[in-house]
View 1 (cartoon, protein in one colour):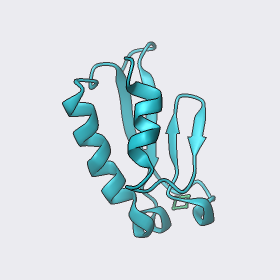
View 2 (tube, rainbow, N blue to C red):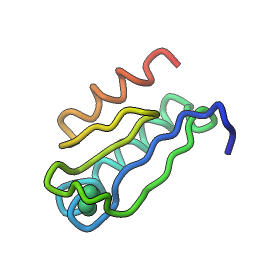
View 3 (cartoon, rainbow, N blue to C red):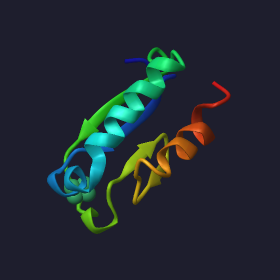
View 4 (spheres, rainbow, N blue to C red):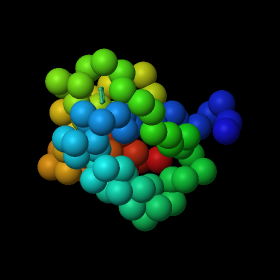
Length: 84
Ligand code: FES
């Protein structure tokens, strides 16, 4: 881990998992691999953060996204990582 990496974390708690975070995880791993971002980000899963009703949640740096699904995830990733 390095201080200049962008921290990215995804909730893998049971509620977010049931709502699709596993699929989000697969999409993100493929996206980061395709764009060769693995050395620029610090990607981790974490447990429930008590906002299950708004999940699946995703944190990128200081930003928190709620209701992240396969439908809107690509736009979120492009917003944050397209120009890296
Ligand atoms: S399971 Fe993700 S916030 Fe609770």
